[in-house]
Image 1 (cartoon, rainbow over the protein chains, first blue to last red):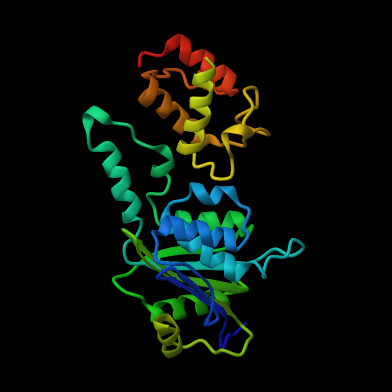
Image 2 (tube, rainbow over the protein chains, first blue to last red):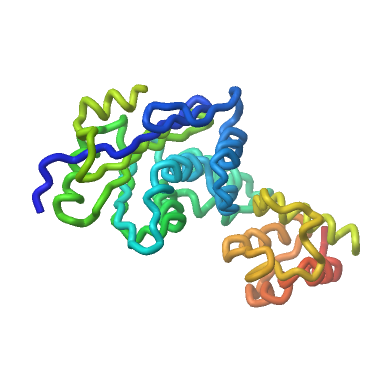
Amino acid sequence: MTVNKTYIKSFCTIQNNQISLNGEIVFDTEPTVFSDFSKKAYQHLEMNYPKFFKMDNLSKLAFLGAELLLKNEDDSEIENNTALVFANKSSSLDTDVKYQDSISDPENYYPSPAVFVYTLPNICLGEISIKHRLKSENSFFIFADYNPEFMEKYSNILLEAQKADKVLCGWVEYYKEDYKAFLYLIDTQGKLEQNQELLKKLYKQ
Amino acid sequence: MEALKQELKSKIIEVLNLEDIAIADINDDDALFGDGLGLDSIDALELIVMLDKDYGIKLVDPKEGKTIFKSIETMAAYISENRVK
């Protein structure tokens, strides 16, 4: 199969205590810390998924975005072959630092297993895959900056090689309360044609 | 013993981030794993760390955990007998 054009089926942005879906604000709060914002967003989205509260902040951020874009894609009758291609700048550094803090004092050395399991950025992909029953391709890349060129090429290769029917791409950056998520679902059909200019424009919104 | 059980319920909710569960929701003989609170293997490791950190109990044989962490009742009984903090 040759994929000439690919399309952005839906997209969402999470930043500054606000969530937007396809350009429309769907949830926002007064300025607050991320743990509080993410909890309120979880309640607003009526997710009913207690494991959410065990996740680190990077996973919560990615998970909220994926929930918005994938909840209407889930069909228990059909295997969802949606690949996940995510990236960010700070990897899992926010959690790495927390874990380091828990083991830095020899007199108070109590490493937390629950924190340790999130000291890799791609764990968030596992959390999304479990929730949405995905057994698809997934990759997490670390870049200095948002990189729409790479994401476009990589998602198109996955579709052309028939490794996936759709691709959920995401920039999910979190470090010390500074966060931004921009996720978009790529399909072979649609109205909003994927190109780098559009990806840059949507990212800046 | 009753105070320790309440303390354990509170600690478990806090340490394991059980946001949707209140102290009153946990009965002393409820299973902590499986069909009860539904805790997982990472939670089990956190409980082992909690025993060490808060009560000075080091579990040498992880197999012991299966019996100790069966319920709040069994945890409280084991901690009462073995605590050094």
